[in-house]
Image (cartoon, rainbow, N blue to C red; front, side, top):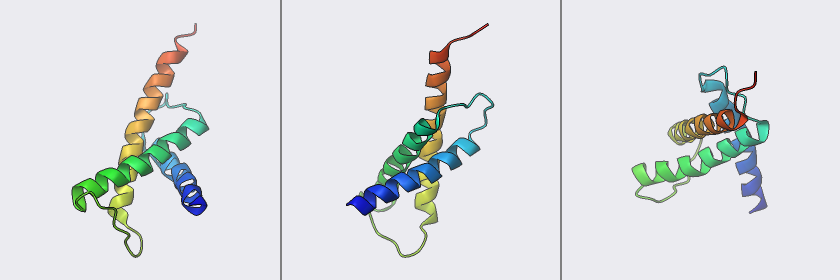
Length: 96
């Protein structure tokens, strides 16, 4: 259980940073902790969507590197990064 949580956090950092790098915006200045949260949500929701669409809702352990699952994780993390960026940009307001 602890190993799973550790891998989700490490994966969340990696997936979140990849998603933040892909998002095309020069205003994307969300904090690092929020990038990690977006990555973790990308992993969890991306796994759920991938399992629902391709494995009848069952999480299937694959041997090797499952590219399609990770592509779904990054895609979902990108959506969360865009949402987080819009929310944090709106909450900061305009400063003159």
